[in-house]
Length: 95
Image 1: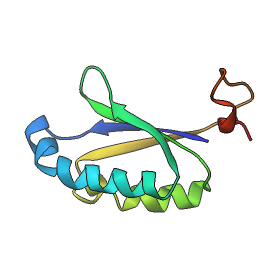
Image 2: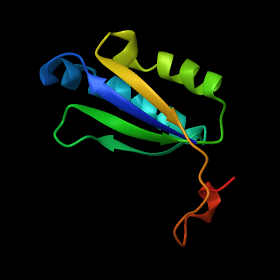
Image 3: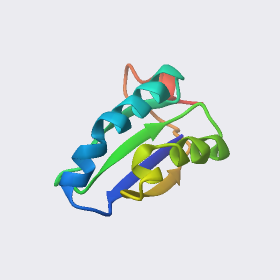
Image 4: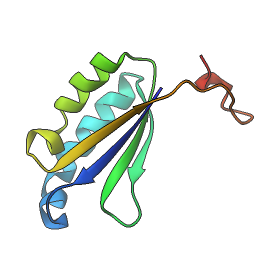
């Protein structure tokens, strides 16, 4: 499983201009079954994505196709972890 932290490199006006394309990209990742959750950081300086059921190489390839990355709007930090416990209702996150 992976936690991806996006940090914006440009002002929010440029982020908002690319947001529709970024959302379409997110929709495809959810349809492919690899993104579990995503959303904005607070304050709005970037975002967070929770991903699973893929390799790190696959994740890196997918992140490379994000319009935010392709346009140089955000940088990405990827943290891999192995979930060993989960709350009721989230057991499917465990390996």
